[in-house]
Image 1 (tube, rainbow, N blue to C red):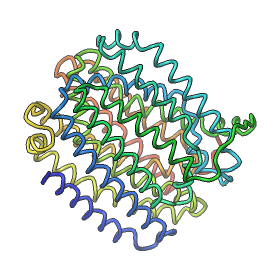
Image 2 (image 1 turned 60 degrees about the vertical axis):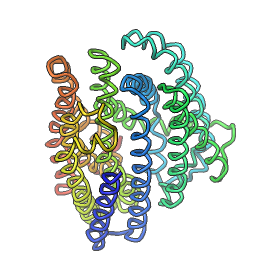
Image 3 (image 1 turned 180 degrees about the vertical axis):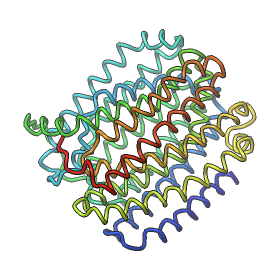
Length: 439
């Protein structure tokens, strides 16, 4: 618990430095500062809940249970990415009225959710065979309820981000996250199985559906416009491709560990990621969510974009680098406090994943810049380069070094991506290339 408090205090200290950095020469200053404070506060609050949840569940469940859940969530994420329409990015990028697209996007979301649900249910036995984990069949079929529920979420929920209403997003997301954690812990105590983690996801998804229809206006209706759908799909094709590439980069290592090793190893590997690199990448996610709509609003002024981006990259570095050093220097202490003695074997892996998290966070901060100019293809290119680094090294390293090898492979992919991202950002901001290409 002392470690958790120290990390939270470190985050708040870094956030105060972010304010100082942003406070000059950036348009939409008031909205940006508010966004950073609310989204930063949300990440601090949810990370505190997540650490508490992990600390409790790690003492109740064995690594293999986390591994079984990891297999189910891995497949769920793949199907969600493969069927992604890019509607959220489209609705933020385009200066359109949300009300004109809500009905059509809601129908598409429902159909998508039903499709993923059925596919998961049918493919469950084959997925379990692939990962050589028969116990995963039931968990995969139960988790199929999650996309079905998510399909009924009011698409108007994107209004919070588009209109910079971050305080409302804070309240909604924290409520859902806390409810998810509470249900997962309750079921873990009762069942001592991976079903508890799925129960939390189902509860959180159901609550999000309820909140989205209670608090957000207008509510969607069963109306469909094929022309609006074509417009969204045309604009969102690179979002889908980028999402697929990002999924591959984030999950190839999980899939290889689950396939070549076992569910227990996958549970250990994913826990190391959650403890070390996930907090670092979530810091970058705060910056992304706040800066993306701001960049869109000032996209016609290259000089303001350049200044804003410089401040966002510096702010991210101030936040993630100190976090990374904490995990690199004190992994054993962190594991003992948060997870307990039975997880100590992931200490060395945490050091590697911390380096990965820092590099991944700094690279990800470039994405809102490209997206604000509708250059989703550049995000896809950066991620594809990272996949090459990961894909070339993952199998031999896992066979030789186990889960530590998987961590090294992920770090290799992150290193591969940095030169490409740097060159693209420099060309966009200095030479003003890529800005006028219509997709």
